[in-house]
Amino acid sequence: MALFCSSIIKRVVVPKLTRKLVGCHLHTCASRHAAAPPDDGSHLWLSSFGGGAVDLTKDDVSGLAVLTLNNPERLNAVTGNMMLQLADIVNDLKEWKGGKALIVHGKGHTFCTGADLNMVRNMLDSKHGREMCAFMHKTLTELHRLPLISVTAIDGPAIGGGAELCTATDFRVMTEQAHIRFVQALLGIVPGWGGGTRLTRLVGRTRALDLLSSGRAISPEEAVEMGLANWMIPTGHDVVEATTDWVQKYTKGKPEVVRAVKNVVVAGAEMSLEESLAEEAEQFVNVWGGPAHQEAMLRNARHKK
Ligand SMILES: C[C@@H](C(=O)O)C(=O)SCCNC(=O)CCNC(=O)[C@H](O)C(C)(C)COP(=O)(O)OP(=O)(O)OC[C@H]1O[C@@H](n2cnc3c(N)ncnc32)[C@H](O)[C@@H]1OP(=O)(O)O
Image (cartoon, rainbow, N blue to C red; front, side, top):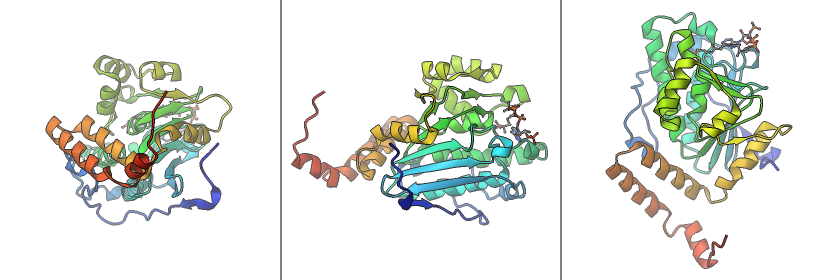
């Protein structure tokens, strides 16, 4: 059963980005990570490539947010406007203290076909390529580090930048009709949204080289087998509802505990040993003696199988 109750869903209206984005201001451990490429505000031209939208719903009771790529006429290709909206949404989610989980999906039976090719054809010079790359690196790096358990629900194709985007969440679940395909080399480029780095860390050097140089499609079965995907959504189920049920096993605790767990893992994955150990200690102290800890001690919790 889905967690959502329609009366408590807030539709978040994300203001169009008209200001220079400030640098990383995560209140979690992520602020001490090596910086993503610098953001000097040179990306504002992206707003001239309109169309599509990125929608967000947040449920304060369950702590679950759903992010929808909404450009179905172009199979959810990402326009410049959508890039700016995605960045605003990630900033909004950073500040969501009651949040526990995030589902990312696409409208209709498609996840995402990458950058809008109508835009790409008009920005083939290196200045614009560099600026778009830096902007998407920063946004997806911050998405990856959000103190939320994040999962991409893939139905239909996840191609090019869409394949990269799905590597920026913690988990991936796929329908039988889904596939992931890094087509960048077939287009004369390499991944430009941080997906090459994330893929290599997820599946290892040899598999990443195979997938990135061949541009072949990865079926859900193969994705699960190599650890790129974590579950196949049974046929006939609503994708978001099924994913909501699937992610619940990770979100039973209070938000501060779920978030602390994610922060510990992000630190372990990205920081040096010394920094990560220090961060783990800080996360531990933050939850020690807190409401969830006190409650567990009072009920004398036992953990039999
Ligand atoms: C920046 C870079 C990166 O990785 O860093 C990228 O992302 S490069 C982007 C990489 N992505 C791609 O190369 C995907 C190109 N698209 C395709 O190969 C194909 O559309 C498939 C995804 C295989 C689906 O083929 P199928 O025959 O089912 O549909 P279709 O081709 O008629 O597509 C339906 C409509 O969506 C549009 N459409 C599809 N993908 C699009 C894209 N990425 N940008 C803009 N429009 C796109 C088509 O032009 C078409 O519009 P009309 O009905 O108006 O004709």
